[in-house]
Image 1 (cartoon, rainbow, N blue to C red):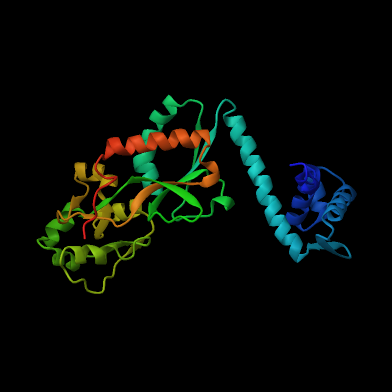
Image 2 (cartoon, rainbow, N blue to C red):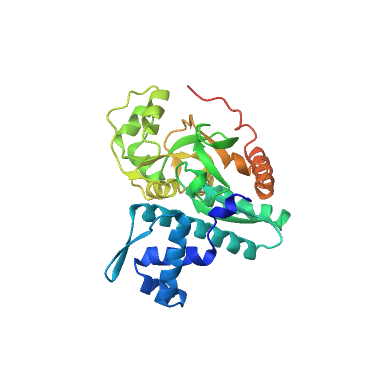
Length: 308
């Protein structure tokens, strides 16, 4: 860090620049920071001298960012946000570590959340913050230590731990099943099919696995399993849903299997994390715990063969 300190402007300079960049005004920045307009202007000038280039174009009574200034402003704003988040996390849990975990919405609410109290009771020094992400992202650009990933083992720049496989079933309301009287796979084509945006070919594969040549498939689109499941409960159609996520609905009878023909998904659930966080204590503890939970929940899913 000895050499790097030459490139670390003071926090006062960065805060003044970020506020001025956001407002496109030295006067508005001064009001926000409780400084004079002249003080903000001087701080910006000192920062520009340190950088060796102008950050703002000054035109009469107005200022606007240069192209390079816009890029620098975005990066500084993100850096300040990270510092603020780190400070908040430390204040929330000064005795231990914080794990920022990105989760899939339905998996997080239906499978993970009910089990987290058990994890936290055994690890009182760890705080877990949850955010939802539907697709892989760049860990360098997000404030996440790890993520629950459904897909293949191909997250660029991340290490992966296999958690479980997944079986999906065609599910619908009992009234819809009685209305159509499904007996064979092709019968499902008579009813409305509900599709997941993230799995556009799931129904086609189900029909192929079960020996039915699918026609061009239409139907409603959903971006989350929870809404697709609720639509199926309401009788809007048949949804191809992960069986482990709808166990309560099946047990209550809110949903029934349109046909008892499950299919194993080609993709699987993983815990993903950036390589530079591999030894981070809260992540190491959580990783060990969630693998054990998965093994206890579905001991045969981690190495289950896929149906053709």
